Image 1: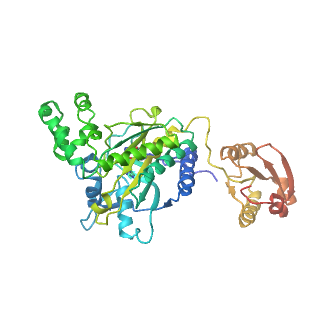
Image 2: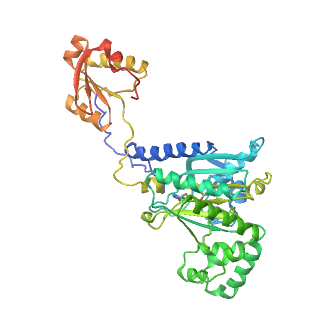
Length: 431
Ligand code: HAM
């Protein structure tokens, strides 16, 4: 049967919302590859998967990420539900995972809890290459140890993961942003530097000065960047504990032989970071070159109503990761094991029976009931689908109760009785 003719009057087409996109079957192989490698790698370090809701109570993000951050003030998809509760599509997943950790008392009975997640996040940003309104993150969170070995080992895992995808040129930049002991003195010093220069700073920086002056390092205005280049640095203010913690992280990176750079101006866009904070960039990504980011957030669990449990984690942007995979290693999602080509209406019944027998034997089968198509066009279709073999049911085969099996890799072909197909294919379907 052919498709019904299109109605005469065409309705206006509805497109995907701005800043979102469909991930089509032709590209899904790359997505599945980075996900499979993530699972393999992370599970090898003791991480287990967690899936949290796509939306949360808005307060979670206001408290968790920081009420004055760009994410919370400008970028959240927040809406009232039908009972007037304020809900927000998650802009990131550290706060939700921390919420789940507290809610399910996951600190009970375990020392260190290692969790990972893969899923969509939402930020109302101006879309551009590598920046979407719905994007995807692959991330991990480690709860329960403030030891610098957690930072070092997780960073080592990040780099191992990227290398397993061929991304050996990734550049790790890190900083220590201090903690509750040393940050107040630094904040005061930074404000003392900024106050006399207030008139030269942009309005956003005026707000940042009031709410969190460290955020001025994030300003993209050129004149402000020049001002910030001379500002006092957090590294000069770190307390002894933070200084020692950072030194031990750096020493471990040296011992691993992981290339890295310390940038005392690295301040990330979320308020929960304490001590280690880091980014991994790839030069090929252009303006949005941060492939991933993360750090330590020792105060977050307490801030969200839990006990004093330290945390460390990171999230990689999956769009940016997929975009960065080296060329050449064209990744095709595996196609069907068997494609049944029925030629003519008579062959359809035999095709359905054959497909059922094979599927019951655990084999994968694709059958497209378009029996008017020529063998050539059905073979082309099987090739496009990346099928491993084609089971041909032509007029002769139907008459004789046979099937012709064509192996796509080498074109080899043989005809056998239909009753022997399962035995003939032998082994497992995945072989
Ligand atoms: P983040 O730096 O906001 O950190 O995001 C991490 C990564 O998500 C970025 O490096 C980028 O690759 C990707 N990303 C962010 N926004 C977008 C966007 N609009 N479009 C495409 N990709 C985007 C966090 O989200 C923290 N929760 C990371 C973390 C986990 N820290 C501790 N644990």
